[in-house]
View 1 (cartoon, helix red, strand yellow):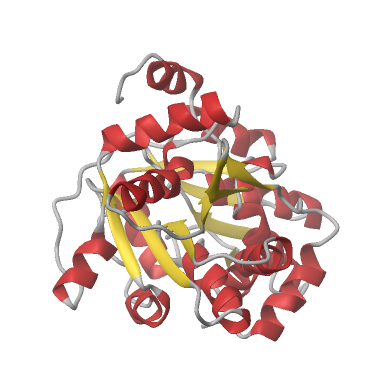
View 2 (cartoon, rainbow, N blue to C red):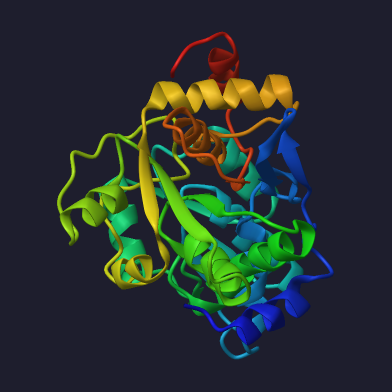
Length: 314
């Protein structure tokens, strides 16, 4: 886990820029709460970790700028933080990245390098991309990034008197590790649950098998969570903090997006609705507890969101 003092230091580093996001009920349901990270300036929680990492870096580390590998949201966070620091940001993105996210990266001043998904994944695993200089800010594994994510956990504990479970979308594990580190340090009895799309759920498969296993990975409109495999360093972190996991059908994700739009007037991307979809499944199975759902982001192509609102599963 990430030390609580590190998370508190991260909060000091980023407090002047990030939003203390709202924590609201899901409709009139007193047992499901929503932490709305889609209200951050870049539309995603990723600004917390990106700012934490770049502001913690020295001038010498930043002299050649920064680099990251991201499908979109971390890329935006790194581009924003690099622009603020006055250094260039070069972003390795998969060719399948949503156009809305790519345009936002460019708007924040980031240089986009589009590559096949396998090449993008390898850049993330190796923490480098041949021929591109700069401090590599890992979207998941860097402790400064996870500490920034953990500031969400501090806010949950301060803003809600009692809750039993936090449900977090799992992409690479940095969000889960950060939030769980803060929450479990301050409220050890709270359970941590993760949610992935069932077409890309390596953590759910690993937890059931007792070790990382190969999965039948299929890309989907839920581009900000799930993956083809677990990052090697994150399996041990997951076993340390995750109490339960869910692999969510894509139709359930789309339904949760529609519910968030109609009941709470909130626009989310697929990853942002995963936690609510998992909460509704838990309640449908008879689990009666007070849970917090992390709505991780709201960056989605308008055409895709329109199809969801029309009742489709893209």
